[in-house]
Image 1 (tube, rainbow, N blue to C red):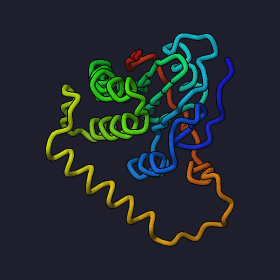
Image 2 (cartoon, rainbow, N blue to C red):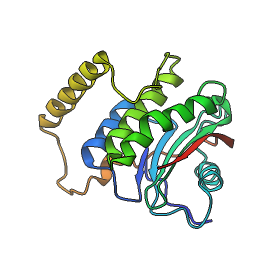
Image 3 (cartoon, helix red, strand yellow):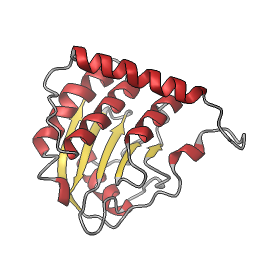
Image 4 (cartoon, one colour):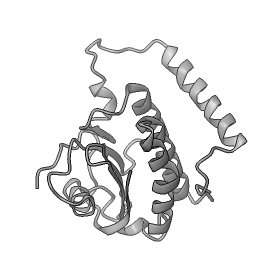
Length: 197
């Protein structure tokens, strides 16, 4: 199989994630956390379930001790999405919960072309479930408290971006992918869920 290179916690091969969204995703993920968001230009002729588990194994997402890897895979050309879950998280981020996130968060956003919002909200939901929080994703609408939280979150990101940075001026945003990120030797057995829009 042909696999993209693991360049960080966000691998945007399909070119659908904007810089602001990437920064939001990285702000939600811990440095080194074995959770990768990947968009694919195509599935290379495979079913997303087969390609997803092989990609996760190839990248070795998850720690060897805990098999705690997660891949959020978006293939916009085939209009498919998958949450691939490592062995160690299958009892927490269950197939049913992964399916709910896809059906109630990702697919409604993707159907109207809003990839960035859908991905950010899905990453947030997955992270909260892994942390042991009770997350209700059965409605496609945001609650009042979620709206308030997102407003404050976006304001925080906006003001953080206004702070002068010590960039080398190289541009392109490539450095924000945490290029030192590597897989930790985790294992996958096909746990998770898929969807089409």
